[in-house]
Amino acid sequence: MKFMLLIYSQESCWNESEMEACISDSMKICEELAVQGKYIDASPLESVSTATSVQIRNGKRILMDGPFAETHEQLGGYYIIDVPNLDDAISIASRLPPATKGTVEIRPIVDLGDMPNGKDSKPVMDKRPVTPYLFFGGRCEEAIRYYSEHLDGNLQMMMRFSESPDPVPAGMLQSGFENKVMHASMLVADTPLMLSDGCDDKTSFRGFRLAISARDEKTAHRYFNALADGGTVEMPLTKTFWSPCYGMVTDRFGVGWMVMVIED
Image (cartoon, rainbow, N blue to C red; front, side, top):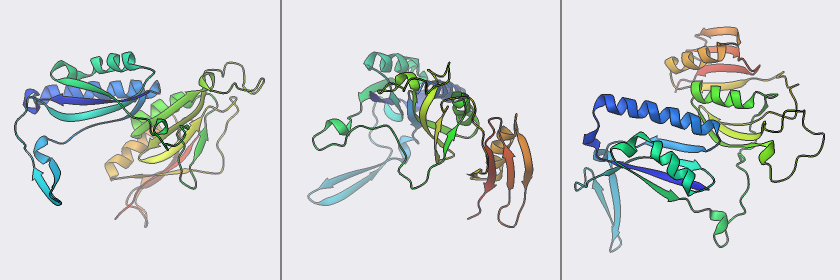
């Protein structure tokens, strides 16, 4: 069941050090929820002074810029989570740092599949013509954690073989793979990937690489160094005629990457 956790507080009640601690603690909670398959999205919002509201009155559009009339608390951010029930949502909301100085409102998200003429609910699958699907031979959850921490990864969903609505055919899985990842979807640097442990530990990657574009050279070096940690560098980051910063590396999971900065 999906819930949106709406963060309300007074912007003035946070000093700089408290805000830094709040962001750090919130990121740790997001990483933990991502590993558990409960995280969908989260983000702070810019100050209310940057807000714009839209009203339609007598067929005319009226725009208003912030700051608006002072209220006790303003909407400052949100989380979207996927958990079994409201009690679990309350438990997570109670752990969020903003709950200590403001309010965390919990709102169930309407499933369009339950509405009249809604679509049937199906697993999250990317609809692009071609999406890379990676098999990690038993290390998928480790890879998800690593890519989430170091490559700005964002886990969208994860299902284990033991959670499959249809029983896995007898003899299909290697012994000990019952709780391995059957399917997961995530964004890595805003690029969709699908991932799985596969059915055994015999996976190897050959004949392909993933190209990851960084927004600037600092980010490219961060990505590259993380991928090189425990991996193998084939070409250090360097300037080329097509990119100011380009390199090739194979990560600790055996996945080959091309890291680059694309100039506008």
